Image (tube, rainbow, N blue to C red; front, top):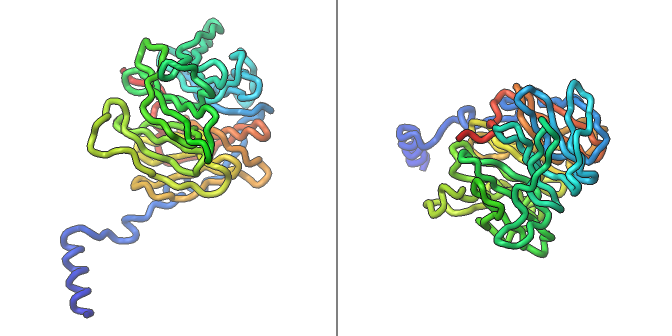
Length: 308
């Protein structure tokens, strides 16, 4: 028996089927060093939608008040109000901040003149209820999560796609338990969608990859808290998500295994809601106390501006 096992191991090694444990393992330390967070700003709002403009100013939105905040050198200034309940946000390459609003749909805020316009307010021809988060693709189209009133026992949430120039999202996935955060994979062929109601992040084909050989699948099962909120991916394919009500950020390695959870300090609050990369740091919003935290990372986050 020993001879047979040794022969199998030798053949596997010769064919490259097995890698050494050291070669396979990627730990949190490889991704974020000591993974220690420092406080960046205190705004005192239910913060969501952290983003950076091209000048390096941070922006966030407040779910409860609908306020749009600019954060410079740790100081938070209200620049506008959406008139609804602002949730996710992403900067467009033209400098406008696109916002998912629970009441009004998808809005575009222009920091240059303060104008707010409705970009889209329907999905499948019906009102967009509880628009949650969004991400651009390379053509300027928008993927949006629309949980509506879904939850663990009522799986009626949707993911929509808004082609450039359209005001109506096409449904590309439905029957979901509160789709929340959303992130585009490097290369644009797949999307990660956080299902807040069942502690799961699924991967679905993007519009440009519809009908491809790999259908939707459950990619990550999260632990702790309630479920995955805002999320992102880095340029090497690692997934990051704000793990709501756990005070932590979940991170996978490049092969999709959960490398671990980077935790905020014990007194920071547990309501981690959204995240963004900027110049070697990962920034995180904590909504319970209205703070922004950051930690150094050894990777490059994906550009959140679409590239036509």
